[in-house]
Length: 98
Length: 145
Image 1 (tube, rainbow over the protein chains, first blue to last red):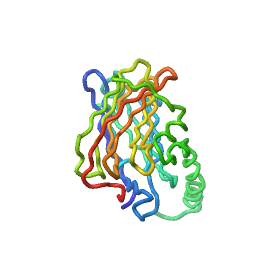
Image 2: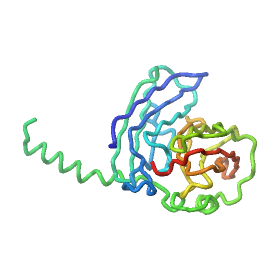
Image 3: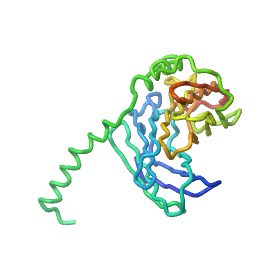
Image 4: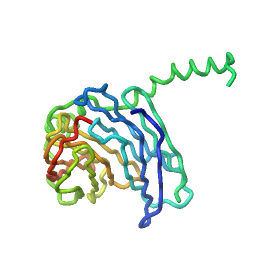
């Protein structure tokens, strides 16, 4: 299974911004007998400013889904989530808070 | 699309630039640690203080170890990062999340678990480390995925 598109939904909930993002990625482990291939870095930006940086391992499930929570925020804020994997592949998605 | 010299140069440029993205910081030592204790040592969080202000939401029993939902948050003031470790996984450190100004110390993710294990969450606030853990029972291990 290959690396593919991302999906994201950012909404205001309880006065904060909830960002739910899906990444299409095999996230294969060394135990699987397949080549080790997993996302290592994830960055979340709010209106162009980095608010969250994550380092993750092959222990994150296939097609990772994350929920992040940003302080405050308003409808129309631009949220960008990007990732880089251990082979140097990368992808990103941007959408406005609904 | 017609292949012009310009598109060829652009394609070559993309190929050359691609490996640069791989240099994003990734703590190989901490993620390569085979025990939770070693991973914590590498992160400089060897003896975290137990805290009731770290919340771990997870199923008591996970039928499928390939997708175990874990929701963590910290109400310790000034929490700047959260690390999630699965004690009995071959490489316990599953992720480390750094919250900058603008992000709340909260994350929900799905992880793989090879077997029943404690999940440890380390929150760092003001240079101090705090820990909470919770056991998740796994019916079918999920490290082959």
